[in-house]
View (spheres, rainbow, N blue to C red):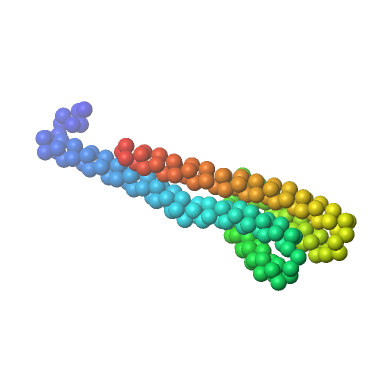
Length: 196
């Protein structure tokens, strides 16, 4: 206090004003820093996370749609009716491959990587099951053995398809929860900034 008491009134006012300006500047720097954090989180949520959500949902939908198409193809005996449907199955499968690759670029969390690994493994079984179903459906001999083989292939494929769709649901749910968590982090950062 001796320092302030020895100062003249003008010096004291100047010192007090300098302290206020310094505190205001520090507050502004802190607020700017927090706003940069909020902006970064908002960009993540509105671009990358939104794309991950969309890809996860499209992946799950493609599996569901193609599973139904494959089951329908197994029942169709007319090749003119089956060919356009077969082309759609191939196009959707190719789109799913593109989705899977893009998703792998975006999702890097341990839980996301684990789900991707499970989805990749089951996708291989799904494609093999779909091929077995198509092979069984191609046998048009009408024998009892052929009908039994079709029934087994269909049952096996449906089980794989259900498992694949279930994992797709888990991926969609994980990405939705992640988006909610990132949104909550943005709100918390905004609230922390507004307290300054």
